[in-house]
Length: 389
Ligand code: NZQ
Ligand code: ZN
Picture: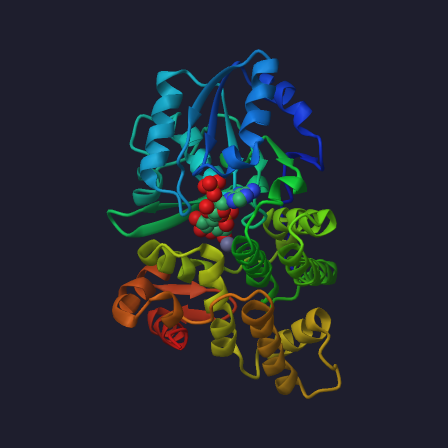
C-alpha cells in the first residue's frame, strides 16, 4: 500500500437553519462579496432572498453574477474574474450546484492573474492564488463543495477540461439538505449516477489498499442506491436528501483515495461527450460506466466486480466469480436505467459516432488513460461504440 496525504480543510455547516452563520463566515474574509448563481432556481426557491438578507444583515456589500450555465462556460468565468478585479471583491459566494461552484473557483483564481482564465486549461498556467470561496450547495452530485476541482467548457474549441488545485478548495460550505427538495427527479438521478461514478473510479482498482476504505466506499454506494429512489419519489424526504448530500461530498473529497494513485477512466471520457453534446454530466456517466465495466472485465479483474456485486448489490456470494461479475453489471444497469430511469444509450440522446475518434483522442490526451485498465485511443473508441445502442 502507498502512503498518502489527507488534507481536507473545508469547514462544513450541515443541516437546516445554518444560513444564520453565513454573514459571519463571509465577514472573516472582507466586506465585498460577489454572489454567483445559475439560471434562477435560487430565485424560485426563495434561497436568493435568504442569502441576500444574511449578507445585508452582516453589513456586507453585495455584487452579483447570475446565469452560470450547466456545463459552465469560460465566458462566465471571464465575466466573474473581471468583476472581482473591477470591484475589488474580497470573497466569492457560490450558491448552486457543481456548475456554479466550479465556475466560481476559476473566477476566484482568474481574479489573481493578469492572463485570460482559459490559460489555466489551454496552457496549464499555474494556479498559485485564488480569492476565498464560500459555497451554499443546492444539488447533491459533484462534490465540488468539498473538493479542489472544477471543470470548465469552451464552446469555441469544443473542450471541457477539469483541473485540481488546493487553492480552489472552498473555505466554508453550507450543506442544507432542504435546499435540494426542489431538485427535479431527473437531476436527482443524474446526481446519483455522478456520485456512484466518483466512487467507482477509485473502487475499481486492483492495487491492494486499506480494507476500511473499500468498506467505506461500499457503504457510500449502498447509501446512494437506497436514497436516490427515495428522494425521487418523495422530494422533501429529509433523510434521503441528507444522506445523498453528505455522500456527494465524501465520494470525492479525497478521503476514499487512500494511497491509490490510478487515473480516472469514465470521467475523462464523459467530459468529451458533454464538451460536444452539452448533455448532463451524470447522464453521460450513466451511459458510459456499464460499458466501461463490460470492456474491462476479464479473469484478472473479475474479483473486483464480484466484491462489488456481493457487497453493494447483495448478489449471491456462492455464484462463480465470473458469473457474479457479469451479474453486478446487470444490477448496475437496472439501477441506472430501471430504477433511476435514465436513458441508456447515445442513440437515445442523439449522439452518433461522427466525433468518436477526436473525442477518444482527447480523452486520453493522445496517450493512455492509466485507469482500472489501461485504455488507449482505440479502446476508448470501442467503449464509445458500445454506448451507441
Ligand atoms: O442554474 P440553476 O437555475 O440553478 O438550475 C440548475 C441547473 O439547471 C438546477 N438546480 C440546481 N440546484 C437546484 C436546481 N434546480 C432546482 N432546485 C435546486 N435546488 O440543476 C441544473 C444542473 O445544475 P449543475 O450545477 O449543472 O449540476 P451539477 O451539480 O451536476 O454540476 C455539473 C457540473 O459539474 C462538473 C460537471 O462536469 C458539470 O460541468 N463536475 C464537477 C466536479 C468537481 N468540481 O469536482 C466533478 C464532477 O465529476 C463533474 O465533472
Ligand atoms: Zn462526476
